Image (cartoon, rainbow, N blue to C red; front, side, top):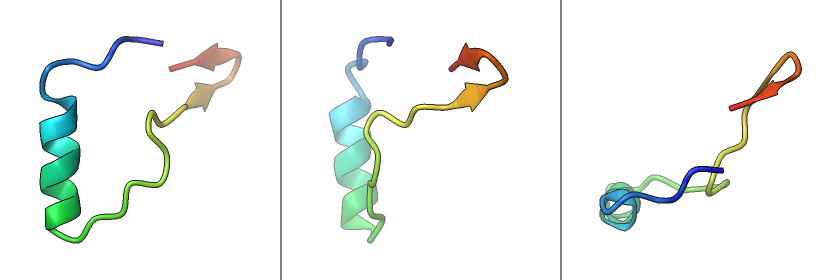
Length: 36
């Protein structure tokens, strides 16, 4: 799993202020046998 970059917390805070609900952090995606 990649590390969070320097913008991660700022972006999450901005989205939450706009009314977004962050449900999965980090979001795990699978495509076939690959995990993105």
